[in-house]
Length: 27
Image (cartoon, rainbow, N blue to C red; front, top):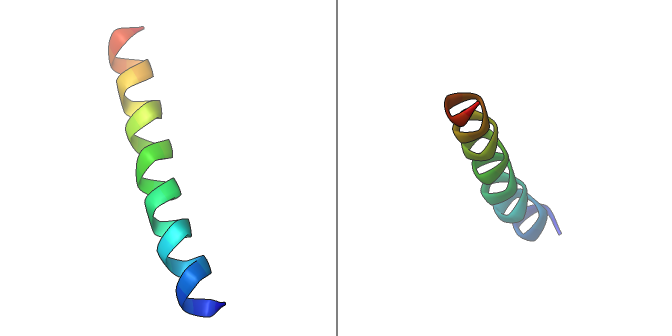
């Protein structure tokens, strides 16, 4: 569970940050 959750959490976190950066950049 720790490895599975950690791997997904990292991927989601990166995607979320990227989305926020792109959104702020576009806006």
